[in-house]
Length: 317
Image (tube, rainbow, N blue to C red; front, side, top):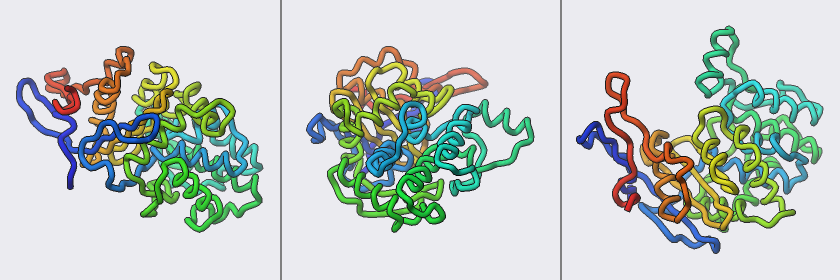
């Protein structure tokens, strides 16, 4: 309720469908400067929360940098280097993949999944897109002498610290706690708070833990998503920008100028997310020419493009 049309699905000259959603952009002070829908309503950010969870781990003493810290922020595609990276995090903490409590799964990247199935390999926690985050959570527990058996309990010190960090960087209290697809606690926020937090991370001064998270994502976008992923393409093309996709139609972006963007597609579809993000970045004056291919998504007829998913007129104007 309260969502507005943010994307249109055109088949030729015929408007076939629409996607409703909520979008907000915040300025460097964290105040909203653009909003569509009801950005003050709470939502589960899903995997868009991961950079904030990684910040909480660093604040709790986790010692990760570079590609492995980017992996802790990721919903990775399950490519070989992603899986190997998660195992490296565990090994450095004296753990094996048996410690992972994320849901057994197959790689989400199409090419990686095809290779996996062709090899006859089973689903396993290490292939799940959240295994980097879970490995980092376990490493944080080891660094603090906390139990690893119950690290997914919302009352565990790790999850308490995560909630406190999220409340700090978003500037608002967590009002709901749920269980994410991977089994970890997920903390509900307003989209305004999520946008504010991403702007703060992306613009944080060098030497801060917030900057450490953003720098890892900036330098290693392939580790945050993977081959062919729009979130990876966006960060590759726009220096200093951090971006993170989430399930159920969520997307968040932080700009080095301190501005932030967050959105949720109401029906949970992923196909309109990047289209809407690019439209909002254009409205903020960001040069997105290097990622113009993300500005629309083709609608196919008999295997060829006969239309496109486009931002609504309200966002494109």
